[in-house]
Image (cartoon, rainbow, N blue to C red; front, side):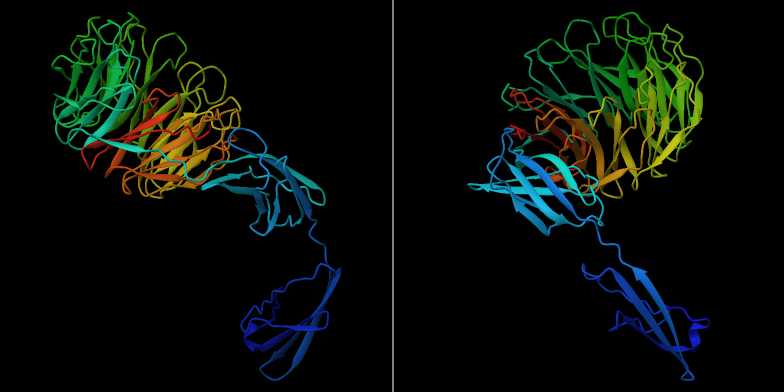
Length: 551
């Protein structure tokens, strides 16, 4: 509490007594004291005695009732990685109140304070030399009653992802995975912006890879995507070349070897390429965002993997990301483009034949750098989520159903969002958001209320300079975890989902210098999700093999 005089400058000292006991107070206004009230005390008489500079004394008395903190009893059960009860585990609340689980894995912690807010229980046990830990979801305490936190599932405290480093070309920018040689194993294709090359690494089937085969592309390749471009049943490659204003097409021979590139001119400084059947003829066409000419190039496939000359459509200033989706519900693919310098998203609606109406522009936050589509409000059409790098926000545009959008709704995230991805993180059937924030070394989680609106972000620390975030069930427990490429700390952060959209503290794994792009897939054929990371500073790709964390 504090004492205030009519004129603080005239007060030379204040003495407090609480139930007759003197209490030390601050020596300067507002003369605050703090003290701990014993649990046995039900009322307090507080007397403040002030002396001014002339020696005059005045007093004030206050009587207050003490409402004791209604304690709670916390109960729950600890399960092992196999789902069976674990006895002998140490469980703690607030790092001060503890119990040890019985043979059925159950615990009871009594007289736990409730004024500190939500209850979270930590569990830990060491078996031989292996340490296992778990933590409950936050639970509002039942004041004066029993707080049931439910089951806590243990995980290995040291989740090892053995790392294999593979040599590729100079400054690898983006990595894509797919079965390139038809043996049902995931292979890797890498766009190397520093050596003007494409690296193809074929999987032996056990997670080891043959040495790269390098293919010449255009100047400064920055984006690579896979798709069956010639309709022969295998995956071909398309590469956007930022420095030569072109797209390189590589047609697969069926065994994971590729014919020399065929180059097609597009706009200036192509930044992103995506595939889709834009004209409805059954083959894959290309859409390219050209950041230097403020345009999108459409290349129509003749059906054999060769393409007509580009058709160009104007969009906003410095488009960096393009995605496809049926935005107006008419059965064909439309385009959404994030325009970095004009703080806008351009929507281009397909006429049905692969030609597009002029853009409709929607204002969003500052510096939009990444756009994703998904049915965020559960009404059956595709909405948009956009990461705004300069305004530290995510813009949500909810589709009216006809490909038009009301004004954005903006949600704050941490500093410098660089990448946004969608996924059902809390298992309630709708799409949530995960955002990598480059300048604050964090990932923001926004959990969907089910109607396309989101509560405030929950932020999780990762390593320095996260560029890219992707989802995958990394521990095999049925929910989506996160993998984050940290470009300034040469690491990948793994955030394991508790099952409700909250995450354990990161597990950090060192990779090569300058990781920029991460993709997931079962690279060694053992049924779990592994990772491949393009390391822009080391001419390498790091493979992180999953050791079946959840099993």
